[in-house]
Image (cartoon, rainbow, N blue to C red; front, side, top):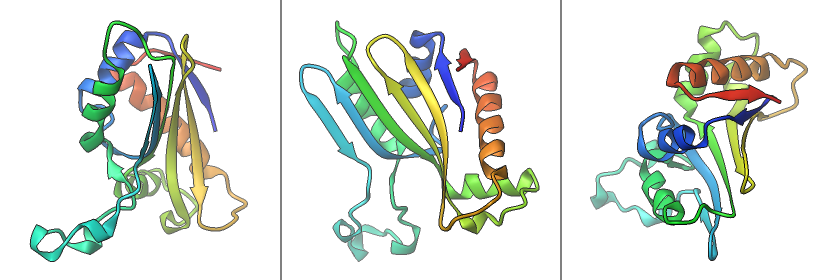
Length: 166
């Protein structure tokens, strides 16, 4: 686990809400505090979809893609005043997480990793990104954590998102 403080909020918010920079993630949960507090549960209600929708039930992920919900989050955040706070819990898409672990020759089978998560917390003054790794079972190896920490830092660098390590 690593914590990174964003040093350019304007650029970060633009990247998060208006570009494809974070489209490789699924939204687990969003909580946005403005005049009201809005909570978005990213869990997909699979029963909502029907065969005539042309959706293969096996292709439906547990959480909704960030790309499909970021505009809703943007609409809740935009305005004359900055939000009081927000929290986003994202997960790297499973296929991207597995590819990353395989590419880095991880000593843990990617099927044992439930999620590579990214927690984004804004408290009204600063935003902090925290990585996390969820497993299906207890593992002694922390290599997936280290791989995820390094990969996120490299990704932020590539995207031009400035940060400080806390």
